[in-house]
Amino acid sequence: MTYDEIFRSMCEDQNKCGAQMFGDVDDLAEAFEMMVDSLEFQGLKQGSLAYDALGEYLCRVNWKELAEHLAADYELFQEEETCSAE
Image 1: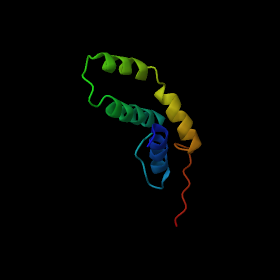
Image 2: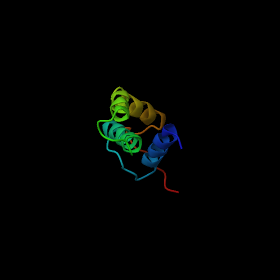
Image 3: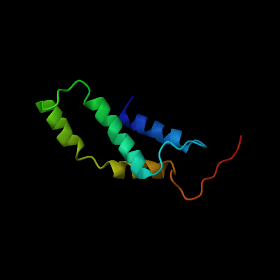
């Protein structure tokens, strides 16, 4: 599963009626970053070249911009929430 698929799945889960996993786009961005960090740094020794290079690369990602883009795609965090009971 790619990160795009994982992030979209997280947004779909948030978009379900009653699901309030993330309070706002900042929470969503933090969740994206934490997920990638936990997966990518797994097995790397802190202070190693690979660890430092990955850290340098990931610190350049604009997590909020990514979260804003996906939140807009899924119409998350709108002022009025509409939900029809099935």
